[in-house]
Amino acid sequence: MALITSQQISNFYDRYREHDVAFTKEVITATGLKRDQVFIKCLGEQWRCIIYSTSMTSSKVILNLNKQSFDKIRKANNLVSLRFSFTNPDAPDPIAFFITGKVTGYNQYSKDSPELMFLTLSYTQRPPDNLIEVLGSLLEASMNSQKRSEERILITPLSLKKLGIPNKETVIFVESVPRKGILRDLSFSGAKVIVVGVAKFLVGKDIQLKLDLEEKFVRISGKVLRFEPVEGRKDLAALVILFDKEKVPMEYKLKINEYLKSIKPTISSDS
Image 1: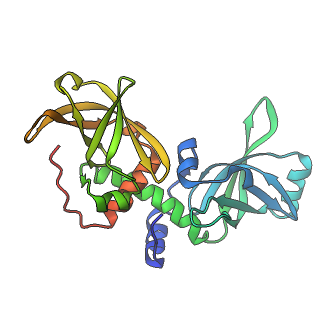
Image 2 (image 1 turned 60 degrees about the vertical axis):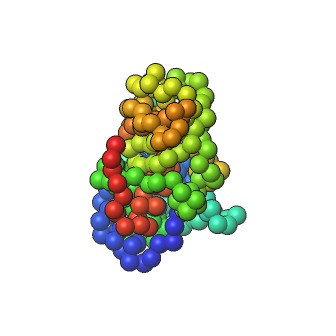
Image 3 (image 1 turned 180 degrees about the vertical axis):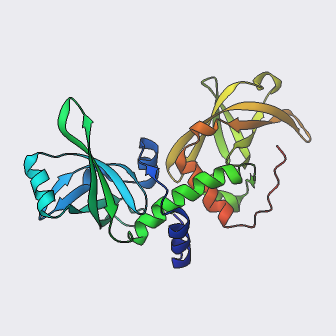
């Protein structure tokens, strides 16, 4: 992630503190959550758990609780600590921290496993800046993917560097058949890719755009909306691709949002 100021952290907290983020597989990948290093701690004991969702004020976790564990939580007046751990892209050691919370609800997760429980925790303090940054960045990217969906980023050496994309060469899969292409522009909602050959037969086809985002490959599903001629080149055409908004990876949204925040919002939206 880009460097973030204390003012931005405060803005994230004021704006998004009550918004829940569900820790789906996609969100876990995008945030680098280390699932094997997340646990609940109470009176010197710790129990592995799964983060189901969290906001900046509360969370829901799933874990096995036997009678002894229940008794220990009651003895602690329902006060526990929840440990988060995230991969640190700038260092070998993860970013880890505890948040103190009070257990405010128990629900059985599965009738087949009576000890598997949903715990609702209400934080008793403001969470560390690391968590506010993670959640705030996700929520902001999701909201801006709607508000600024049509703003286009022209692909240049500078924009490629800022986006963490190694080069403008890419691959699109048209109904699972790979075709090489050149990135012309990107947005939250779509892309323009130059390809060789007759493009009119590709209009309306399902495609996947493959992108290399800082050594992570993502595929974004969509359709070819239309094609445009490339001036002076009859052998080339620019495909205008509309992404399936339900299948745009969170990692991609974060990158686009990061870039758009770094420039003035005066980008053309002509397709």
